[in-house]
Length: 198
Length: 387
Image 1 (tube, rainbow over the protein chains, first blue to last red):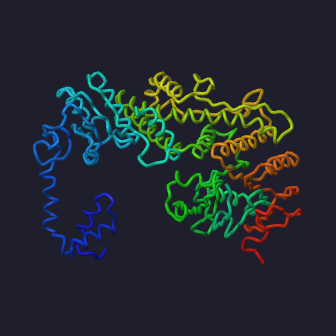
Image 2: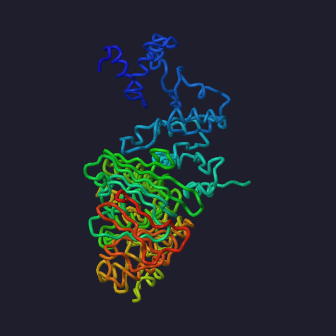
Image 3: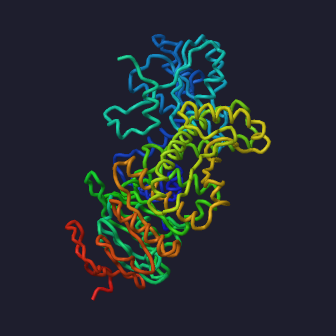
């Protein structure tokens, strides 16, 4: 291409980001080059400082710029109820719902042997140690509904079986506002077996 | 369900063809190699994005062309009109539904359901178990919401579990995949067994329709030596798989692959004296296969409350004249839309709409006894050869 070397370099870096292809990268780079609203120095330092300052919380695995994250430090949170999620973004989604006042444990992914992800690549040992050490009474498995999330839930549940802790799984069911006739058999079956007193 | 219009571009030897079939019985005749089977394949391609024959889609594009297009307007019993368009070009398929492009296959399927009988059906009896599993899976995908997704999840879990076995992962890790596989597999197993029972029940009346000789025939689902052919609830299917997984674990570790689950099952077609593969005559096998397709048709019609489109390819090569006539009679008695191909026009029927295929061009032929039904289009000329 005929791009100046500096522009070319930025395009090459931007292309490494998820969802960014050649065209988007070029558009973003040109935008950074010309836009009055973008401060390139501020952008560059924000990116550079991100990894210096933000690290995983040693307790739960969520991101923080403190020694421990605000959720782990919050004394008003129920420390004996632990919600296990795959990714920080799952934690953010649950927090947005506002329905949970316990604490979290971020595994950092789900089992996926095809991608070389086994139990040791996830924060599973840390979870078990945390449950034992802090006297957790309930562990809510909120891993995803993909096959990897399911396998991870089964794996964790079995490890916690003799650890004197209640293990629950996030309920699966009929999405709000949907018609029963369009819900697939597997979801309906789960919704039925997980039904509650009304 | 009916195909109201069909347009085909550069599909096999069909260069350009526009077709308004009868909503009932269509007979397409012509010499071999003129494009009769291609027309049925094109209908199948519009319905499912692939041919019913074992041809990679790239081989469907007409030699010398780059892009194949099959599009059509279809209507289901409840009334909704859908516009389907399936294309293939440069190794890539695109399915369009009501002008929305790149529709995932599981959303696309089911807007027009077809049942095909072709000479290649012989493989269902003679070929490998995979073909019979695929036969059941396809009917279930078309009739059970969510079955497609369960299958996809099953395959993904299976591949992961096999990888665990290959990389000698811990037993705890392998077993968590077993659990996922058992849950998904038991749904597939229970659905398949229920389907086989329904097909078996439909098979007897289907056979009686097409042959005078009594042909005692059963289909049995085979899920390992410890399954006796009984109906299973999902819970029972789950405990069957759990038993099998426990018993076969040691061998799985040795062989580094999963040795339980519906991906290994088979369907046995049995005549009185034994497996149809060995003990049925060629004529009996052909009757069996047509009866099986009639049964499939009946099951889909009952489960979806809608008659599927029936495609019968090249009956005359399969059956002697009198048997073929019985089949045609049986099929014309059915409601629903049918397409039959053959080298000769079938003996005249009031309801038959005749089309002649010659060199990839289709011409409507006035029937000796003109149709009286008001709901069918009057015969006219289609295709580029219209003069």
